[in-house]
Image (tube, rainbow, N blue to C red; front, side):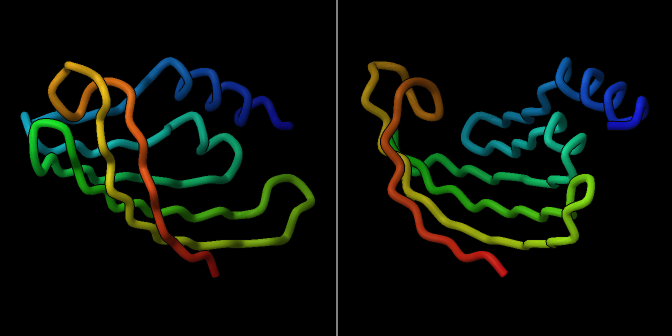
Length: 99
């Protein structure tokens, strides 16, 4: 693992990007970049305890791995805590595909 990947991993691990505008969230995992993964999630609150989620993922080989993969997914979250969505414990059935 190169020193740049280690520094990038540590820098990104310290950051957690999450933009919240009451009922809409856009999330990503910057620490995954150190492993060649780009991912993102869009979540839209539907009711006080449910939300809809769209996700995307791209994997660009790590180290000697020459495999590239791309994926999309959808999910429906049901929150089981007294907190208003999108906070708390949830159950999320989801479907998706990878190429």
